[in-house]
Image 1: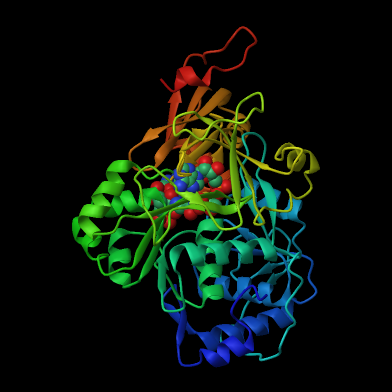
Image 2: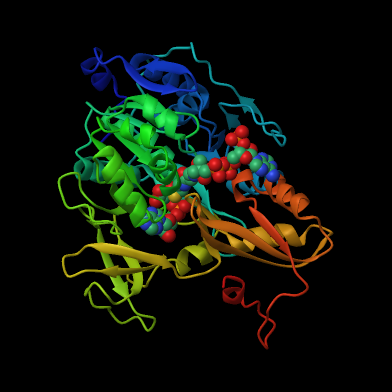
Length: 466
Ligand code: MCA
Ligand code: AMP
């Protein structure tokens, strides 16, 4: 089965459809996209792995599509990446070149530009389903981000299950303004549109005004995006003609769900997943959409709850357990990290999500929260407290540090660093933005006399979160 609908037969059958992708002020027809991406494929064919600076531009779309056609694994690099995080991603992934947008600092790697007006109609054979589509870097509770190796088969299985659940067809126009370096914006948004054959519009920034003006049928957003839209009633009302509004990447607050129903006339579909498993649970276009619930497992996927001692937890709608999933969409492991890969799975191959959840007798899932305080979700971005702490400890003005996620009406959680030392808070915020990435910067730095610790010297983060 083809990963994208970009085979020549699909192109011929859809020749009358016209526009395929609108991004960064440029519109690519389906034949522009196929012709230019196939030309990219010719230039990269045979490469081991390439890095793509994932800005929301036509160059990024062509680079990624070209890699998929050629069967070359790509590594999306955050568009706002800093020095240390970029160095880590390039070294760990052993990327051989930058493809697409030119980075500010190529770090010694060659840059292969893509040409918007080049065309090739060469027919590349479909790569093996088990081969790697991409390596996405994602944060853990400690240490630098790990590269999740994601196969073509996993992507294809997830997109087909989502298309079924959301009644997503080639008639849809999908709109979002999310980053193209994470599963949500990249796999679901861009690759979903390519596979289903729907039109894709990237709004640049996901502002309420841009969503209102886009005229889509299907909209994706993280809860921060929906909460900003719900606070802007005229933009929200402009979404009434849409077919489906989908929320994910973090919990959608019930008041935001309710406001969307009132303003847009649509109960949002909520879905749940993670980089390692892709999306595994969702409410349905044709089913109940219950506030606070992420719905039922997608076709072909299974979930279970386990207690701390490994015993099964009842699906009674009340008892909280650790959520585990068994799915054909699971990743192939973390690059260069067999230890972390092994730790992520049970002996029977179920994946440990690290999320606490409740399952009702009717099968509906509710995500209660993360099991570790060191895993922060801010604006839908997954950020490890440990990686920020490590960077801050490298700053000469920081003697001790503890990073936590505090509740935030806009971002869900806001990254806050408690620091012992002489440093100026704004300098530390900029330092993290420059070293890791802009979206990982603490929104607040509190300089304190000391950190609360237990008898063993471990920081009591729960006390900082009171
Ligand atoms: C501020 N800025 C700075 C600094 N302070 N720049 C450098 N140094 C500083 N100290 C600037 C930035 O450059 C930027 O400028 C502006 O401030 C806004 O920053 P940002 O933090 O990005 O803005 P925000 O408004 O807080 O962003 C909210 C957001 C964003 C748009 C909702 O958080 C977002 O895009 N979230 C989506 C995350 C996502 O897709 N996650 C999916 C992963 P300028 O704007 O001018 O550049 S989860 C996943 O994939 C799973 C599978 C799932 O379930 O979906
Ligand atoms: P990431 O690996 O960046 O994709 O983040 C995955 C994590 O996001 C999950 O383990 C959850 O903690 C969280 N998440 C994703 N979707 C939802 C949702 N609909 N409700 C609550 N949490 C979610």
